[in-house]
Length: 180
Image 1 (spheres, rainbow, N blue to C red):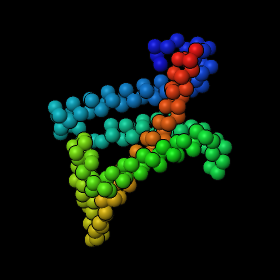
Image 2: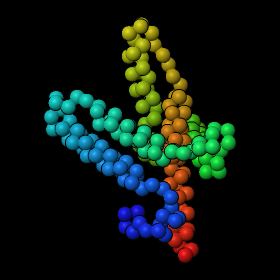
Image 3: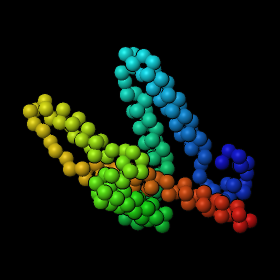
Image 4: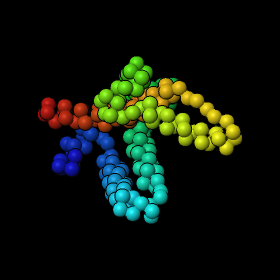
């Protein structure tokens, strides 16, 4: 959007407040730069870098993105939904079903085949970390792999829910610009 001159025509077709997106975008670049510095220091001098600060700051930035993009979603309340909110819920439900269904059907091998991500290995690592906490009370816990599939499905649903509004705005903007 930086290549377009912000004039009356752009503002008439698109009512999204872009300075907020610019601020979030700037935060995202700061987090990426910090991530690069921390990873470089971890590789060069690992004894000096024993922190997950960048990971947590990245999570804060992602949560700020989500909060900004879901602003005014339930403006009419939770029982009386707008058409845009219904589309968001439909897309998020579809994303959850596709991700959960494909992972459950292939037992996690879909991501291993497509992106070389071992979902079952990640799940076993998660269970081992949880059991370290439970070991303090001399107990243990087992989780079915479907727990991890549900979590990945919920992440996909959240991303779909958040990205529907910008997709609608940009599609309407380009439709209006091409029609004129």
